[in-house]
Length: 317
Ligand code: PMV
Image (cartoon, rainbow, N blue to C red; front, top):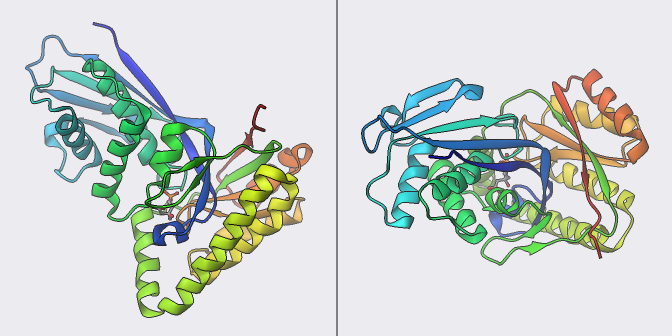
């Protein structure tokens, strides 16, 4: 029996993280330099229903049945089999590898979900379309994270730049020109659920202030959309800075992230901000293409454990 393999990219949020949880718009892009890859292989000699998980990158080798009920892979199998109306699964091995850093705001969890759903559905002879994959990955995110906006599973499933608003159909963005980004990992793990819960707590104690911050971010995001689709890439820089200031006010930045942002700006970036849940994780800097290497070096010097240079491609007309 053949093996079934699927891949899904990482992602970065360009504008609007956290505010998107509260119904404001956000912009996200795929980061194809990193990806999750999942292969499903039949275990011909094993008893029906046995599922072996093999994920060396996160040191996980286990029978699915031995993982806690709340483990995302348990949730994923339950979600998928329920959606497909399948009761019996042939014995299989699920091999997961990923180059996306975990808990760093690059969508590692959603990418593993999307790739697993695609590979498993193909293995079961019930391939899913993108909309189904996106919906099922969202179910897994919800069970795992509590209150995700749905932006991660959407940008990763479709692998295109998106303008996303909760409860509305997402829109694919067509950049007028290519945009070069340097992504830098602070090396500080920051689980999304904890950062989102922190914002929720502060929002509860000062709703007026937080709602005003979310509105300010929504305006920035809408200007950024206009700029991305009709303007010059460098004009996104000041908007990224302004978005970062609002995130600082929401208390989701940190000394380490601010130091990275400072390093990017003083080595020639047009703008920079944290990306994703914050607290730790990644920052993104908007770079003149010819200075991306220099900015990446400055970010490493300032403490980044890893940098990725990525380009949002100009839309083909
Ligand atoms: O998965 P992360 O760390 O990129 O965070 C997702 C962005 C948030 O807005 C903080 C949460 C959400 O569900 O949209």
